[in-house]
Each structure stands twice: as C-alpha cells, then as structure tokens.
Amino acid sequence: MQTSSSLAPNGNPPEPVPESQTNGMPASSAADSMREYSFPLRRLKRVMHDSSKTPLLLVACGSFSPITYLHLRMFEMAADYVKFNTEFEIVGGYLSPVSDAYKKAGLASAEHRVRMCELATDQTSDWLMVDPWEAMKKDYSPTAQVLDHFEHEINMVQEGVATSTGERRNVRVALLAGADLIQTMSTPGVWSDKDLDHILGRYGSFIVERTGTDIDDALASLQPWKENIYVIQQLIQNDVSSTKIRLFLRREMSVRYLVPAPVIRYIEEHDLYEDDGAASSHSVDKSEAKDTANAEVSAAAKP
View 1 (cartoon, rainbow, N blue to C red):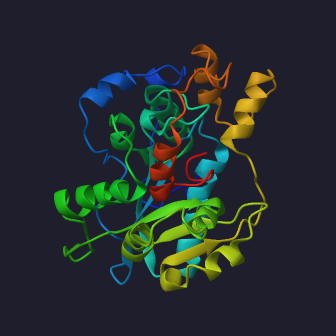
View 2: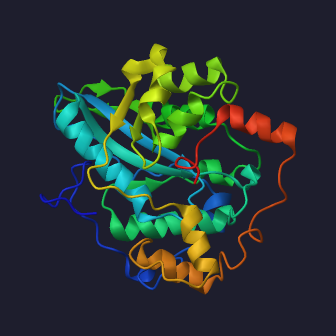
C-alpha cells in the first residue's frame, strides 16, 4: 500500500511485482518454501533513519483464512500511530500464519494460507513480509514462541539493525493484533500470567480497536503491562473478518474490495471455502482446546 511519499516504513521505494506473480498463480510452490525454510529479509530496513529512536518490528499472528484488507490496514494504522505518537521507528512488518495444528473450522491448509498472504503483501504492500516458519511446523506454536522466533532471527542471527553511525542496535519485537486479543487476555482462565508477562511484558502489543469490543474494560485487568500496550483507534471503522468472507464465499456472494484481487483469484482457482468445514482438520478435544486457548489469540489475531 503506497504512502503519499511513495516510500514504505522500511525506507525503500515500492518494489515492482514480478511478472510471474501477476496472474495470481504461485511463482514457486509454497510447499517448496516450507521444505527449505529461510527467514524473509528482503524488505527489512537494515539502517535506521533516526538514531534517536528505537527500532520496532511488528508481527501479526493469525489464521489469515483468508487474509483480508483489514489485516493489511492494521499494519498501516500501526505505522501511522508509531510515526505520530511514539519514539519507535518501524524497520519491518511480518504476517505469521498459524500451522494446520490449530485445527480451527474454516482453516485452509497452511500452504494455501501462506501463499494467499504472499500474494496479498507482494502485490499490495511495499514493506510487509510473510514468514512461513509458524505455518510449516507440525505442532501448534504458542504466540510467545513465535515472538521468540522473531527475536532470535532479528537480534541474534541478524544482530539487529544499524544506525546511521554504523552502531548495531537490537530491535523491539511487538505483537500487532485486534482488540479481540486484549479481550481474551483479560478473561480469567484463558491466558496464564506467565504467558501474559512473556508477551506483554517482554515484547508488548499494538492493539487496533475493533467494532463491538469494549477495550477499556479489557485493559483495566491488564494494568501490570499497561505501559507496553498501545491502543490504535480506527478512524475509519472496518469490521471485515475472515469468518464473514468465508460466509460470503459459501453463499457465492462477491468479496471484491474486501479481499485483495490476487487472493480472490487464488481462492477461485483452488476452490477454497466452498465448504467451511472441509478445509480444516477434525476439531480438537476439550483438553487440547484449553491448552491452545492459554497461549493464543483472538478472532482478530487468528481470524
């Protein structure tokens, strides 16, 4: 998504879309990328513009089944908020699709979801990236572990980013999610204090307000981490969700302008979401569901 200055938050000019991707078909199989994983870096800002600020990496975990324009808008809203209200400088943004082990109704295969996210970011954004690490794992990865993965790749493997003077600086990793996430975090028994402290205490979260969610009540029970929770107001309300998109598709209704065009083409070409339950695995049993809920995300974070 272009900014008025035609530069993305990573400071790079918009990238041309490879011709091999413009028809909506994979330039290379997502399955191949899952077999040979490498952390995506091509849009990461390697050198900061303002050395007085703290470098920030935004990570959105979710089902993305399918990805919608709201998922992409969340990053743009966060970028505006960071620019005008904080002392951070964004160096990158990642979508991390959940693995098939999440076993949620309507969950298309990880291969399809990763590819749809790639098509959406490649053809509508000039700074967002898709990391398939979580999606390619056989077992379910709690959000805290996913954030640890980004922390390791950015600050350990890459040794952070450089300032204009050549100094290396560690990057602050933070979770980007909808207000539903904070609502689940404030619900007793859903998340453990250990998980909350790891995610909100160590990393922090940027939360986008969502229609129908009382975020003030939710924040009231998360006071120990209030300094690490940044609430982003939706100036233009958007309540599009993957659940609604799947419903529209099952009813053969149009989702144009709700989902990126290349994603719509991909869905049609692969006959996805014709039956909302067909693409997902068997439901988890109650004990597995409780373990999953303790570590994980809302409809906004894993819609």
